[in-house]
Length: 458
Image (cartoon, rainbow, N blue to C red; front, side):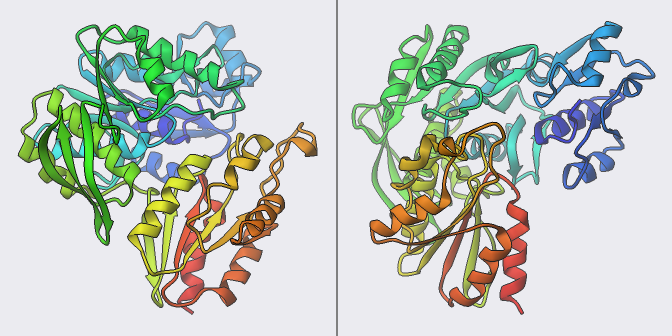
């Protein structure tokens, strides 16, 4: 149920590849997931209802978009058919006999888990994985794998209507990376303390012979991982960490840095993705791979040839010397770090940031002031007015107009628009050769990337 979600569609594909007969239901059936499921010969029932449970399945996997009041969920409960959540199914069918490597944190989960899976593969240890983005080396976001390892992106979002705990508690972690812990997901977490409690629960269930690889640059991470009963390996820019970075330099083609392990030089590295945050993501992966005994030369070679992941600083095209980049950044910290990395990577070029507030948290006033500090590296900022959240008074909602005004007061050229068409019309008369356009959204943004490239090509 909810089969067209990115994770659910991938799970359906994995179960199909494992030999099960799989069907699905969803009310939002559209590309790319509808096409993917069709290629797997998985039948999709449009809409929800009791009829989708006939003939009666042996098991129903319930996505976290499904509410208890859903008519199909009501029929499911009434018929007494066994059901599980997506994380439960992933844990049972694909993690039980594997060494589970779980990547968690507010930021960097998809990039870091993609990097970990890719480097394992390049070192001859092709893992199973489930990641929240398309891993370029595989051109998919899941793999059954042939090695003892399974890499999974550990989301702190809630599991299902019958299980409001975070998904990562079901992933049986042997090694867990914790990149960062900040307040997010305001629709299910009241405050930072509630998020800390979820991560603390993860620390409690860690294998005692496993380990946590934690970014000690983040004081909240330091606090939370102190509750772990297993080994904790620290990493970060802080010289007090076990794994650290020295002489970091962002240049065209990637980020270059030296890795220091326990105070001793480990290796000079290149990460093809720009920015300090990506160097730290890479450092956490190096720490994990070193922990499981991979050869150092294989690790460094794999990192230098990492192909990246879709929608993470992904260059969608260059037309008339105007570069269009797609990035998933939406939290204020992610926006700030992404733009800082791009400004370094494309020094001397005008950086145009186009931002769509789309998440529950970003469409509320919670981060209104924080976003003012996120766009310092941009030369021009364009913000789309968000679709208002229902049942929230206007004074609790994010204002793109206010953000643009606040940025102007700081001396940053900024403007807000009501819709994507107006943004494109403005760009047609504003962009000049040499510009780098960073489009930041966790959604499709009305296909603005393709439309912009088409417009520039005319």
